[in-house]
Amino acid sequence: MSKFIVYPAVSSKQLGFYIDSARCSGCKACQVACKDKNNLDVGRKFRRVYEITGGGYTRNPKGALINNVFAYTLSISCNHCDDPICVKNCPTTAMHKREGDGIVMVDTDKCVGCGACAWSCPYGAPQMNPETKQMSKCDFCIDLQQKGEQPVCVATCPLGAIQFGPINELRERYGDLDYVTGLPSPEITHPNLVINPHQGANNDGINNKGERK
Image (tube, rainbow, N blue to C red; front, side, top):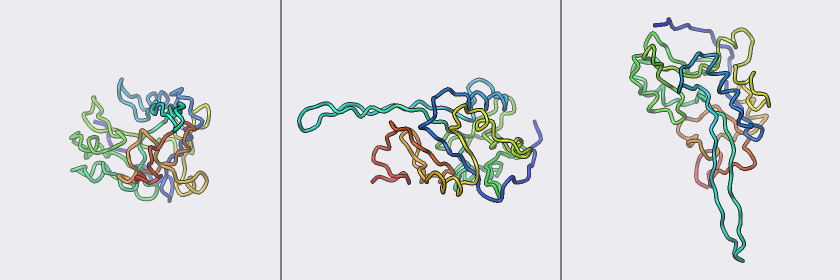
């Protein structure tokens, strides 16, 4: 069992991700780079690129067909939430949110592999490591950040569709939309996530707080 490494905070502010779904081509370079960097086994993915489709055809009052079909890709990992339900439901405090940068991490010195965090997380972030029988997840590439480098998903995206930084700065720059179809309501965990939606994205009448309009 590997010893849990305690890294100092890399920021005095909560970190988060900006996902430009309008730019995302679905190439999955971020997903593959994350798997390689973390040496993940088949089926375990800390960052996942979802292909989201929906909608259909309706008719206007005159009987003409209206096309509201949508399709887009969306790259999602752990959102290092303000109110992480994985932390709330961890019985050993192994899953914890760091002070300062707010990164949610797993203390492998405490984790018993019960899976409560995985069952709780609406984003599917915590995942079982089949070798250690403990939980694992995105740690925001804290080892790279300690060296002044970017998280591997950010550095690898060929279109610059993933950015990171203090979430308040990302929200000031890009807005505060944190929900599109395919994601759970942000009211559950308050994710540190900003999304620029694809032109085909559909929010099904839900506002940017995950509430019905």
